[in-house]
Every structure is written in C-alpha cells, then in structure tokens.
Image 1 (cartoon, rainbow, N blue to C red):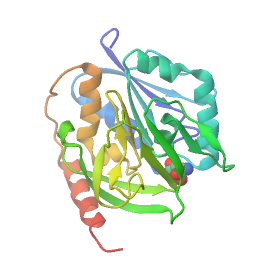
Image 2 (image 1 turned 180 degrees about the vertical axis):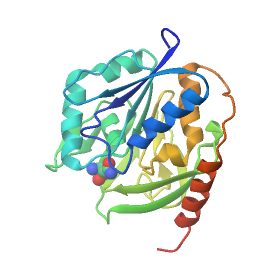
Image 3 (image 1 turned 60 degrees about the vertical axis):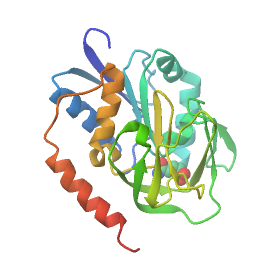
Image 4 (image 1 turned 135 degrees about the horizontal axis):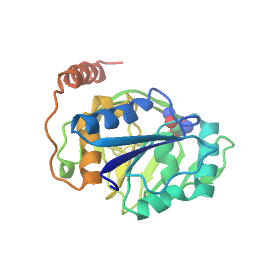
Length: 242
Ligand code: GLN
C-alpha cells in the first residue's frame, strides 16, 4: 500500500461484469472503508492501461466474445502481470478466472492464450452448461465458512500442480471436472466460477483479500447480519432439488 491508500482496481467493466459481478468491487470497497481505510477505486475500461501499482484487482465474468477481447487486451497490456510481480492480490470470476489461466477455448472454438497467472487450463465442457446455485467447503487452510455462489458456464477448468482448489462442492459443479473442485488459488491470485455477487454472499473472502493486501492477520469486526441473511437464503436454495 502506498501513501496509506488502498487501491482497488476493477478491470474492464465494459467487457467483464455479468451477473452483478460489480458487486464484488462494492463489497471490497465498503468493507475496507468500514475498517477506516482510505480507499481509491479505479475502474479501468478496456481502452485504458492497467495501472501496475494497485493493491487489489478484481475481474468479473463475461460472454465468450468479450472474454476473447479482454484476453487479447490484457495480454497486450501486461500491466496485470507486473502488478502481480509487485505483490498485488487478484480476485477473478468465471470468464476472468479462465483468462488468468494458461489458456481457454474462445468464441471461435480456438485455444486462446491466457495470462498464466494461475496454473489452470480451461476447455469447453462437452455436457450441459453448468447453471445454478452452488454450495461448497472452502479449503480449510483459508479458515473460511462454506462457499455460496451461482454458476453459469460452459467452460471446464483443470488445475495444474501449483494451483490449489478454492473449494470442494457439496452441490453444483464448480470447475466441472467431476472431482468436486471449485475455483483455484495460489498465494496472491484467486479464481472462482461463482457469481452472486460472490463477495456479497461470502464477505469473509473479501476480508481475506483485504488481509492479504494489508499484510495483517485480522481486521476489526463488522456487522454482518445482512450478509448472513443472504447467505442463509442462498445456501437453502442450493439444497433444493432442481
Ligand atoms: N464464457 C465462459 C464460459 O461459458 C464464461 C462464462 C461466464 O463468465 N459466466 O465458460
């Protein structure tokens, strides 16, 4: 953090922000302000350069064509990789998650290179599109309560040896590989298929991003009753038979 200001960067709202993924930015921003932090939020459109001095970067989901355009521009720009080298934290959803991996299948049916910031490869699922509420258990190393989210994707994501699954699903598909894994993470880069917005449903993941960015072990508590009500409603929905 420079100048005691937390810099939150939202990448390509014009291309990558389906299913209310903008909510992830709002939640991180709000929870940082509730802890008395001075926050600067930067929305970086796809015709603008990615700043390399941000603390937390967020990327949302998107349709197949905007996803390809976003990947092309992010590869050309290279600012996000530099930010990660500088120690930035990245949180990505669905199309954004696939872009952070080594490659994915684009709207033209071709293998599109990603940024390689996460050790994952995405392919096109042969089965039905994965759609619906998801409930999972987050990797116990992260010490977080169950994951709730909403998925809508055709892609299937395989993890390489340096990516850890973010969660194991109890209901839903997640990565779609049939082994119950959902999402992936390494020390500073996170990816998930969960919309919702996922950080509104899982505010303690937002706090984890803040703690990593601030390099602290704990944050002052917040009143999370509203989040709890939302979580309970959506966790119950995930357990309803389709
Ligand atoms: N286009 C990607 C897929 O279907 C991502 C979709 C999304 O971001 N919701 O796998």
